[in-house]
Each structure stands twice: as structure tokens, then as C-alpha cells.
Length: 368
Ligand code: ADP
Ligand code: GN1
Ligand code: MG
Image (cartoon, rainbow, N blue to C red; front, side):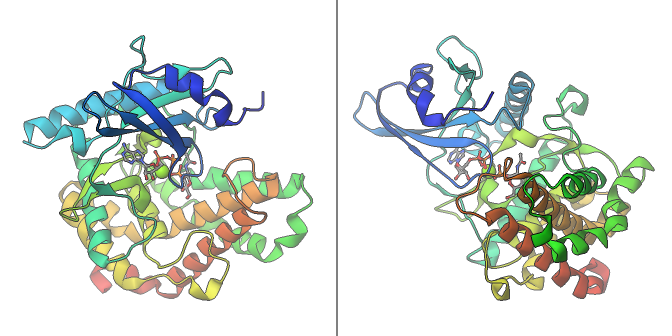
């Protein structure tokens, strides 16, 4: 069943939670590609404005909302314990799930839409691109620390919210299928991009083969470590809270590292049309690597450290392949705001991959 516009059941969803005051309004918020996110403005009993994040979970992407929310409540409860023991402030350093009026972790509306609420973490900024290098360094430390804090979490209790999410070999096969079937007749317009992918088939298998061979460990990872998935404290500039926990599941540390590099080690938007503005920034790459190794390095195996550049390159290639596949399939996965946006997104990723390939020896820590 096609999903209705989130606005159609927004009011129902708002009624499903006790926000502790009168709701002044709810507006679309953020720049995510998957879920429908709203900011809810509430006037509390003192007349102060209190904000919440209300999200309709994309259940075409996340087929098992119960499993997904079990992951998120499990992980955030665990983090709350660790942060409290470490003397931190769990209300700001992890997300908190607000229960529905009947005590559930999400609300199901009359159209089967699934909604969840988090208190808004105030006094923070969420960046779409790096403005100052220290911010990227902070994000590296924050994601590295997140992985470390969850090192003791029972990975076997986690549901795999999207099967084979970062299996780059599988993403390659899905691309081949989309190309073969070409449901929108778009294959003829993407010959150059197609060639780019096909000539890198072997690369797609590098990390997955190492995982299969037991040479890289599975860890509890975030799997969507874009810069805009952490909140940075406005006052201190410190990265404080990792958000967007839908894809927390067993994965490769290299993918968390690589996805951050993909998104942040440049100065362009993910959908920039002018490719002359899309350049991989080696300095930012090194800054992130330093922060990530400082935060997570002790726990990383020698093989994980050795393959960091592969994490960067393959997450970027994989993401480009996913955008291209979605373009071929008619843009049903990543939300678009204009025609051709997924193709533009694909092109930025492939340009970044080319830049990394040109700089390849310099990406290795020992040779940098
Ligand atoms: P998506 O999966 O669609 O990317 P996110 O969970 O990342 O959704 O949320 C979208 C945006 O909403 C974030 O980039 C951030 O700006 C904001 N956001 C999400 N949760 C919070 C929160 N608890 N406090 C403040 N801002 C938040
Ligand atoms: C999606 O939900 P969002 O916007 O944080 C996607 C990521 C991609 C990213 C590309 C569940 O992330 O895997 O890397 O877009 N999330 C999912 O910007 O597919
Ligand atoms: Mg997000």
C-alpha cells in the first residue's frame, strides 16, 4: 500500500503522545532522506516553549518497526546507564524515546504509519557541511566514542533493521539488476556512471571478503555516520549526541569511518550539480582520521587500521551506486526535491571516489 503524506495523519500522531503542555504547532524539520521529521512546539505549564522531534518512520525502508524501536530503546537505555556512570548528562548525550500515551515506544496511526518522539536536544547545532575543521574532528571523536561506548553491548540482541545494508557486493548486484530491467528507460542517460561502477566490481568485494574470511570483526556500529547525524554543543563546540539510530546494528567499523569521510571530507552539498566544486579534501580526511583513531584506535585491530582508506572509498562508491540504482528504479528510496537529484548525488560520490583514487597512497596513515 502506498504511504499517505505524513501531514494527513500528523494530528493523529500528535494526539498519541503527552507532550506535557499545549501544542503550538508542528513543522517539517531537518534534511533527512528517509523518514518524515517534524519539530513539535509545545507551551509548557510555565509558558516556556519546549520542542520535540516527531518522526514518521519510513516503514518501506524499515519493515520491522517493532524490532527497530527495540534496538533504539535498548541502545539508548544502555547508553544512558554508561553516560550516567561516567558522570555525563544522559538527557543531552543520548536520545531519549518518549513513550506514547499507552506506554509504547511508537504510535501506530489509522493508516499504519509509525511515529516516534524524542525530546529536542537544545543548545545544539546540526551541520550539513563542515564550516571549521575542528567540527569535523569533533564529529570523529563523537562517532568513535559512540562505537566504544557500545563495545560491551550484546550485538546478538540487535535486529538487522535493513538486511545487507552495507554489503557493497550486494549493492553492486542490485545495480546490475536495475540496469538490466531499466524500468524508467534511464540507462541510456547514465552510460558513463555505469562504466564507472562496472569497472570497480572487484573493489566492491574487498571489505566483505575480509569480513567473510574473519579478518575484520563485526562490531555494533551506527552505519549512517553523516555529519548531520550528530548534534554539536553550541556553547562548547563539542560533539555531544549521536542521533538517527535506525541503522544501529552489527557492522564494520570501517563503514562508520568511511561514511563520515564520504559526507564530510569535502566542501559541497551531496547533490551539488557543479562538479568543479566537488573536491575531496585531504586535510579534512586526515583530521577525521586523527580524531577517529584517538577515540576508537585502541580497540581497532591492525587490519581495521590498515583498511581505513578502503572504508572511505567503498562507502563513497557504495552510496553513489545506491543513488544511481534509485535513479534507474524511479527514485523510490531516497526522497528527491527535483528531477535528476539522485543522479546528481551519484555524480558527486563518483567524483569523490576518483579524487580518493588519485590520492590513494596518501590516504594511508603511515604514508601520509
Ligand atoms: P533522517 O533519518 O531522516 O535523517 P534524523 O533522525 O537524522 O532523520 O533527523 C533529522 C534531523 O532532525 C537531524 O538531522 C537533526 O537536525 C534533527 N534532530 C533529530 N533528532 C533530534 C533531537 N533529538 N534533537 C535535536 N534535533 C534533532
Ligand atoms: C540516508 O536517513 P539519512 O538521510 O540520514 C541513508 C544513508 C545514506 C544517506 C545519504 C536508512 O540517510 O544510508 O548514506 O541517506 N539511510 C538509509 O545521504 O538508507
Ligand atoms: Mg539523519
